[in-house]
Image (spheres, helix red, strand yellow):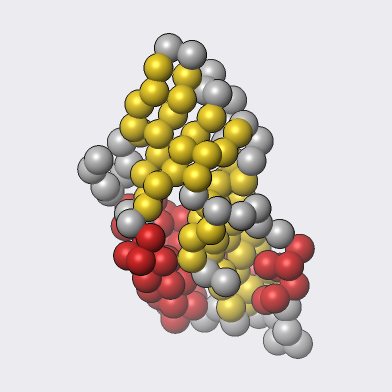
Length: 135
């Protein structure tokens, strides 16, 4: 499941895919398009590299935090205010591990994944400078 998609993301399916008999906690993070006076966002990626980086980040989180599972799905294409941009779900035996894994994934994704945002406003359009990437 981890990777990029142009389709909407089902939170229920994502969470259910991570629940096993050893899971005591599932933590999710959902990033959405907020109304910052924008009409819409357009998200682009170097898809092969972005997908590989998302898998690497997920695998690091599983290893470092002892997660039983994790998934991260990032949307691409044009998104309106209120639509999901990224969804992360981490499962673990205990909540501390799941929270730590989820935070690690979003922070690393922002630094490392080659995914770019363009904001469309009434006044024009512009690329958003990412934390770790230049456009």
